Image (tube, rainbow, N blue to C red; front, side):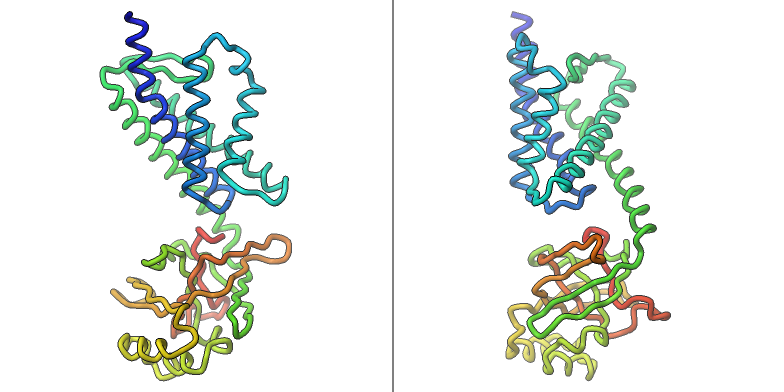
Length: 304
């Protein structure tokens, strides 16, 4: 009876705990590999991984499913569910990032096990921790992992930015295409409050040639702060469906509003490594972004 009770205590939190952990690992994998993230697909993949663990705990006698081959196979399945791929090279890169993310989480688990005075052990790749409150264990594990992931993500992101500060940027609207030089700016955390799409800040002079005349007049006459007038002008323009208002507290002005438009698409990088993005907003800035004119757009690191 005692064994059954322990199993019940473990199983009622096992699936939920693994769903959360798997989801965080896959989210970290998506960030590292720069895959398009679908939270529904991440959840489904995390759920499949949790079911696999629950199956092993319920049927411990099925040793074949504890083998390295089985674990690799389920990891391939989880990544395939979580992300979509057009090339094998992209899948292989994501698998590498998945294992790196998993090792980081495992390191967090070892750290938690080391500092846990109640004790614990590892069997068949699973962590077992002695604790009076099962929910305390889960909360502490998630908090520990969250801190470690944040530290690693900041380190990796800062190194990526150092290696790739300036990138070619192509912006496509119905009126044409422009090619710019963009700075990867860690301070650019702007997003569209309606769709949560990231914002690329672009100088007006650099994008002027493909803007409709009525939009050009707004910036040439410095009327971008007159939101009522801007809205009236844009509402009569063919670009009204693209129109966005982006709040910001930087760029030399606090509590400002940036006028933005949704492009058809943008392309980041050169021909050797090019990334296309459609879920993005172009925010127009009516000043120079660079005194040396080395760049005329600001990219969020999340887009790189």
